[in-house]
Amino acid sequence: MTDVEVKELKKEVKKYIDHADARMVKAVYAMLEADQHGDWWDEISDGERAAIETGLKQMEQGKTKPHEKVMQKHSKWLSK
Image 1 (cartoon, rainbow, N blue to C red):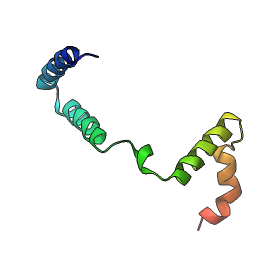
Image 2: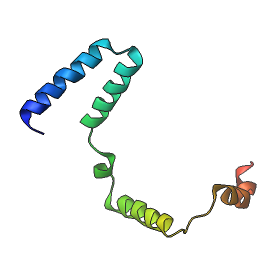
Image 3: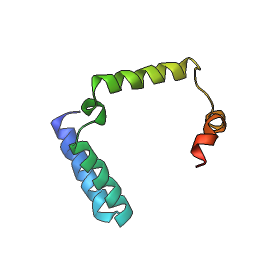
């Protein structure tokens, strides 16, 4: 996207914001605010990233258990 296109897009966004209700303004603000903090993926450790990637691979391979079965198996520790 060129600088000119970005400038035009900003104008359009400002028009929408000027007419948006409070809910939408808050949603846009939250999205822009979150973007200022960077991506959480970049802030976690290599070990945490590796664990997440392992879990995703296991999920793709069908190596998961239904929530109901896990809860049934461990319910004796969760009921107290």
